Length: 265
Ligand code: PEP
Image 1 (cartoon, protein in one colour):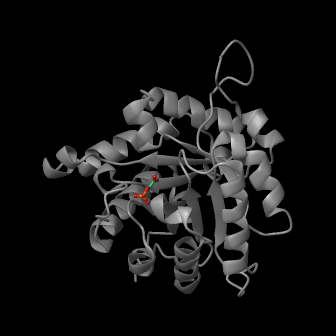
Image 2: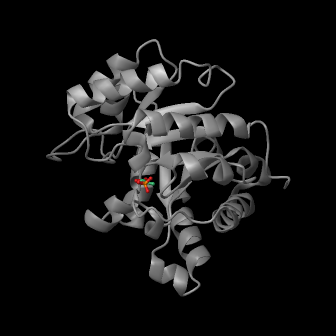
């Protein structure tokens, strides 16, 4: 086991519900998840668990989670706090809904909605400035991996997103490495390949911002995490949890992934 595994990094398992679940379905999923995890997996020493529903369900999910250690997150935000930005939601509004995190730079935002590295940087900075920790997503396409450009691309996205942040803000950032070719495909990165990229991310953060900050930063893996591969992925020294899409839509499978994170500790 490498030096990079520290007990101080509490595992984090976040469920990205994407564009799924009506209010009723969201409340049902939360109730089922709480019931599934009533076995002690959520005690104070266990992994941190977060769910990210659509904006319209945030308030209902917050209410349904009341009294549970599971928290809720948003899937995106705009960098301006207020103004003439039709259709957008800002960090202060997400804090008003008690969000614990906001996902920034998910590959679907980059791919389908044109979120550039610069937009991701502005979103992450705005979230942090408001006091909302971002889960910043980075990851390469299949073509980039096949061309041997994985590290160059991922570290480029990472450095672009973290540029200009002060150490205090950086300490609240979570990074999610999500190879695009693994998202929603059922083909996860191998634990060894995922670990190699996580180690490169941590080394880059150490080189740019110091070892202490890098050692404390939580790095999640995302891309077809399922109950049957979660434990091996999260057993890797630099993988501190998971960002889960499809498997987070089912209480039973998401709970199994949370339990796998509990074992990692
Ligand atoms: C995601 O959307 O962040 C994700 C990792 O999806 P999936 O788990 O379905 O691959």
